[in-house]
Image (cartoon, rainbow, N blue to C red):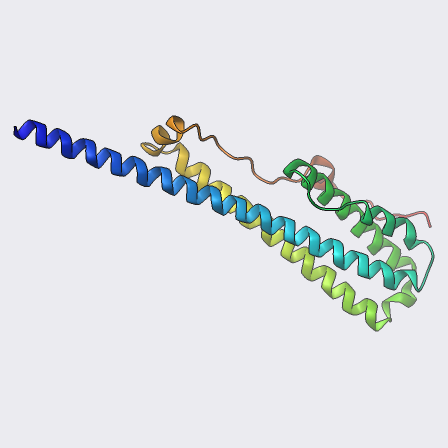
Amino acid sequence: MTGIIVAVVIVALLLVWFISTTNHIRVLEVKINEATSGIDVALEKRYAVLTKQMEVVRNVCSEEQKLAFESIKLRQGMSQTEQAEAADKLDKVSKEFNALMENYPEMKSNENFDTLQKSVNDTEEHLQAARRLFNSNVSAYNQYIVTFPTSIVASMTGKAQKTFFEADETRKSDVDLSMNI
């Protein structure tokens, strides 16, 4: 009789542990989804600021139209892979815009431009923070599901490691800021 009670208690404890571990994995997945949403928000903010900044530039010179049209093409509502590609393209547009500013020093004295430039810097920092949060959550999730005994529950429930947000090879190299205007 005592053996049956001990077996029932052990099975109950294992069941509670299994449910608790599964719930913790789900909480970590929610944090990753939340961080992905944070990247979306940062990209949308970045798009809006760059669009407004392009309006200021449009009033000063005509060359910015090329950049504005490129940034407008990069709308949200994309998969994570498309998101990374859009982020790369927006980085390129932003760098081209900054290079354009170097060739038009009179725009630097424009108060509206100065305010918008500070906003762009703020959005870039926000985007980087969102990416770091995403990678931090992915790291916590991956560490949790690969450690024993949690790895048993993870494999039983079909959980696999998540991929970190990484820059592509072209973004890791030096940036070419030369422009033909």
